[in-house]
Image 1: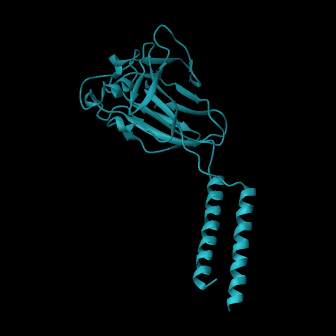
Image 2 (image 1 turned 180 degrees about the horizontal axis):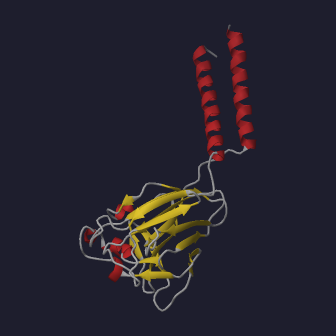
Image 3 (image 1 turned 90 degrees about the vertical axis):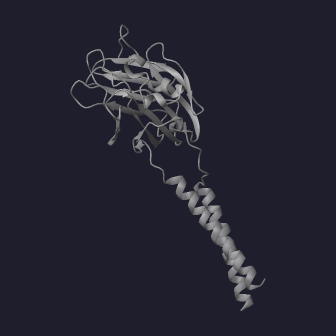
Length: 272
C-alpha cells in the first residue's frame, strides 16, 4: 500500500476514534433533576409555540368551560382549574397535577384576561383562545406543578405562558403582573402584560431538563402584596434521543482503532 493509502487509513482511524469519544461524551454529560430556564420572550404570534421534538402533552388552562385549541399545529387540550363555587387546593388532569399552599386554586376566563384591544387583538383566534383564560391562586400563595408520564434519562422541553392582556384583576382585587417559576435555585420571572394596559402582550419561556424520575416539579409564585401567579397554558415535549455508546461499545471502538493503527505502523515500517 502506498503512502496515499496509508494516509486514507489514518484519517479513517482518527474519524472513528473521534466519533466514539463524541458519543461517549454526549451519553455521560447531561445533568438531571432541575429545569434550566431560557430567556422570557414576549408573545408575538403562532410561531411562538415550540415544535421541537415530540408533543407529550399540551394544555389550555381556564375555568370549567375552558376550550381546547390548536396553535402552530400543536393541540392544547382543555385543563379546567377550580373556580368560584368550586374551591380546591389541588387539580389533576391526565398525568399533571397543580396544588396550592396555603389557600386555594382559582381560574378566570376571557372577561378577566382576554380583550380585542391591540396588539393582543392582532393575534390569531386560536392563540387568543389559549391566552384569554388561565389558572391562578388566591393572593400570596404558591402553586406547585407536577408533570408526570416522563421517562427517566430522557430530555424534555417545558414551555409555559403568562398573559393578562386585559390587565384585569381578580375577585379580591389581586393582580397578576409577574409570575416567578422556580426549579430548585433556578428561577425565571415573566411579565403578564408588556404595557400594563388593555391590549398588552404577555410572555412565555422554555425550560429544558433531563428526567431523573417519572415526574418533574416546579413552582409558580408572585411578589408579596395581593398578587397571584398566573399560567394560561403549557406544553411538554420530548427531545429526540442522541445516539449513545455504552462502555462495552466504547471498548470495541478503541479495539478497532488500535488494530487499524497497528496495521498502519507495520505498513510504515515495511515501506521504510
